[in-house]
Image (tube, rainbow, N blue to C red; front, side, top):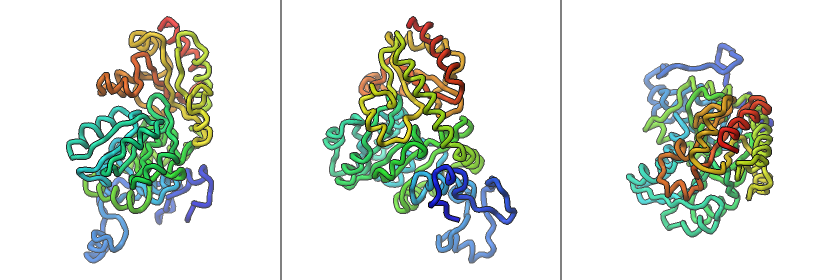
Length: 395
């Protein structure tokens, strides 16, 4: 049954499921490494690709396939490839689509580990990367070379919630025969649809909001049948950064409540951001839902919600930030995000700690910056917890 004519919430619950002969209501988990063929001829036809079907769970598993089809439906893509982690999704995208001598133009405002992947490991294989300011379209244009094959960005960015105009970057990428890849981890398809805005590929850390409760690690790549369904899938089939069936089942359960959860996350985060902006000791709050955000107008048109991750700058620096973080009781001190539980971290020494001081300065990651990922607890309790942190930091 096709669910493409149905609305988002219905597809998040129903899309992709193909019931077995057992008639199960909930999607089953298929914890098997291999599959039995009816004959030698059937086995040969499956392996050659002449006949579709299960072969080996490194690259064909019914539970994983259900997750892939459901997420592809939500993002508006033709094909999805599920991976072992969000970083594996980015690696699979680059390894499947690029070769030695190719060039990436990437936003400077991306996850620190993604920066390391591009600048250290891909560079060893002859793939160069130029990093530019996310919201400076002229910088993207200047960085283009004849060998440029891929644009990469996160919007909103981590942790400063900078925004890129996806339509504008898609037009530029396509004008130079490059693909636009958007990490949609912070918004999810519940809040933003990059493919509908012109992007070619969307990547996810399913570990975050797609799961929603911090239970499993996984990733996904969504796009068309050629780039993703053939090239990225081909890398996964060969190299094997595969998602486990159990994790896929957990993510399926997460997708069922994604729309409701993102609405609640967004409401809590915006209320706390407004409150923090008015507090002494806080020099700046980076949240796209605030009129003070330089791209607030773009966020209102490009996204259907402002997201749950934002950061703020404390007056002072490293010492004040650590005092603040150590004083909270409800916020979990962890670099993960996308959980029902609110989390807090110091980017300069965690998510972006592997960058050089110069790289952090270029990305705007100061020692006084704190990132919050607002969960689903009582907003009153969360506000009181942040007030405790402000007192401890001297604010």
